[in-house]
Length: 217
Figure (cartoon, rainbow, N blue to C red):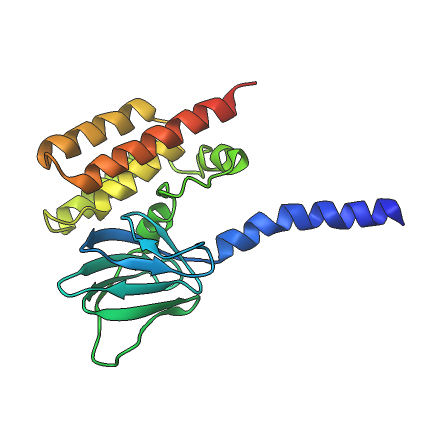
């Protein structure tokens, strides 16, 4: 009986991280203005950061002139919201408190959304096991990654950073850390002083260090 209980307990421990991942609804890919985040994942309300993962139950308060760009993992939609207003994050998507508040929406390719979901989050709550899993190639190659990126970059606006987010996540997954650093440097030169690019660099440097530590015997 005790052995069976232990097996059940171990299964629960394995299953719980998957449950936590399933609650991730989307990723913030662009942000301007002091947007406030609250919800079950937060001990208290705080300022939302770019590249944060949004979870079921989160609440977002957008002040006047605020702009929030996000990608929903389930639907593959990119949504851009303009404040003022209040948004509720649910597993099925995002709803506004006021019907007058409506987003600009476009559909993103599935392969792009899949990679965007792997962007490191500012909360830093990435377990070593996840780092090992994410650092393993999932059937893609460097050649196919860069070919897909070139196609996305050609079709995107110059101000659209999604193709670079796709390429960064792919380089990380393939453990092409030198290429990842070179891309970040090019992004910094293209947009000097950009706070989101600086945040991306810090997030990926931390993720790379964690991945290297996890790979050590």
